[in-house]
Image (tube, rainbow, N blue to C red; front, top):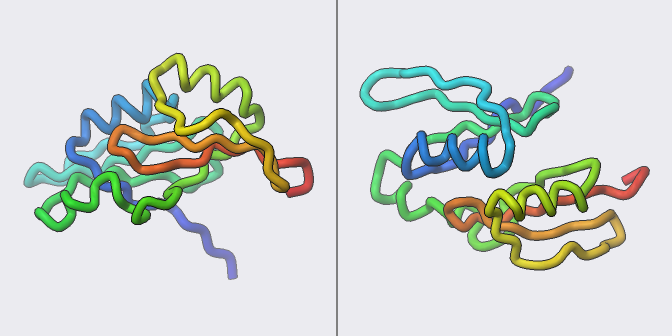
Length: 132
């Protein structure tokens, strides 16, 4: 049996502001933006060259969901954006306005820097060591 995680739900306040952040600030690709009716859209974004898994941008529909925007992992790092060149991407992302919480640091598994998305969720930008 072969299985894959196809998408991860990412709560947003507004579809369009989230699309702008992901496509312009993080340089992701807009994979799909389909109207579903009733103000709902099926919006998927992914890093260039991604191997299938994408983020499904889901506009919060209830007050309880709105409270979770920016807190999807309870204050921990929520997502891990892997790169083949952390130095290059750290500089480019910083130039596009990404707010990093730290300078890149070396860990046993590679080099990492924590940043925040437009809502404050924490992400790791990580370049894994060969063989990790």
